[in-house]
Length: 229
Length: 386
Image (cartoon, rainbow over all chains, first blue to last red; front, side, top):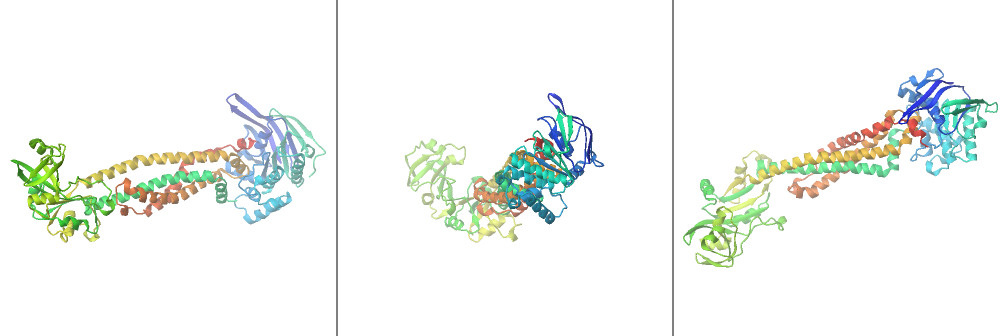
């Protein structure tokens, strides 16, 4: 379970203070698919980064079950992030000089068995329909394939939460649907998916749609049609 | 995917960045190795020159009283001319100039002049193209000192008679303010004839002599050693050592070391800045890569290791390239720049150890600031850049 209490994030710029997030209160349970919706600059990515333990809020707390993540040391937080949180980005962020399987294995935390993880990476790529692409470089793949590879990388350590920032933003409708399907698969297996978007590809899959406007939660819609765990 | 493998893959991907880094560090290493290798050769040679034997030598007849020699500037005794050829063929010595002369003070037309016969300079086989140390006078010709020409109103092209021997004045020399102004120079064989001393000389000047000696002789006084060695082939010769060139060389060595002390910091700063800029460019190119690595749960030390590891690798590769390039440079240009004999220059293997340790550390230090920037970069910022 992820709990956000009074989370706020402000940036100091030369033009003054910018409130990127303000008074965010959310509780996301295991097996939920939450879509965070809003126009550009509404604070979607900032919220994802804050939940993803990558951006310390200016105030408020973010709890993962009973762990206040921002009370952890930087290295402990990094370790926590690696074990519990998977990221999927609009631009995929695959490393261009690594093959697909190497990109996936980049997520392997130290002390984990190399052999087991190699097999797991292979299995994930097979499951995501990239079994024949494991030795390819990102440049040799289509956008949809790249995003599926990014999902495989996000899933390698068996995270509890997947944070997806505009994961379908660069994809055509068919590939977008496939990516959402894989995210739903993760959710139906008990994971939490938090997806930020300004489109509507994923809305049908969501249990909840949180609308952000100028850093504030403007609306929360609960959908019965959302994917069930 | 361990850090080392990631570094190697990245190097293979960004070959130019790596190659430029290697060029920067290997340039610094090569120049340092070249200077040090040549410098070591220089020190070795100067040490040989100063301590062991190699000097400017003046070889005069054995019976020459040293007080007379210094008062007069030459010996009143003579020795065989063939000594100069014996010396030239002596194994184990090298020299740059070898001149045999016969000098005698005589009364000529009521005035004292020094008749000086010069044998055309004997040059070493490998230095036939170098400029001679002194002029040579053709048979039948004479060079007249400034005062002699002034006193007797001698002009170039004029015929003069020296004890019934005719000479054509080829040149009237400039005033030197020394004994040379009262000399009349001729070919050695002509002056021998004038003085009735056929086949005789009274001095051999051998400049920049280098002599490799037996280690058992290293503590012997250089002059005694020179006499001991030369006694076998020049039994009637006496060796006088001149310190001049050795001192000049010592000064040159100091100048060289001063030059090294001046140039090396510049090279280090330039190459260090070069590495820093390349690493900074690499960090900028890899902003999102750094972000994703952080997002995947890897900590700052892994990011630092990625960049420092690459710098260490650049340093290591550059150490070997730089060492061999520097040694090659020293072998090729050292003899010209440092005026040492080529055979004195040899690879300094200790410098390879030095390079292998220092070059990676240097590269790592040079990339320290960009690495710090990479480590402190906010991953959230970079990952937001779509």
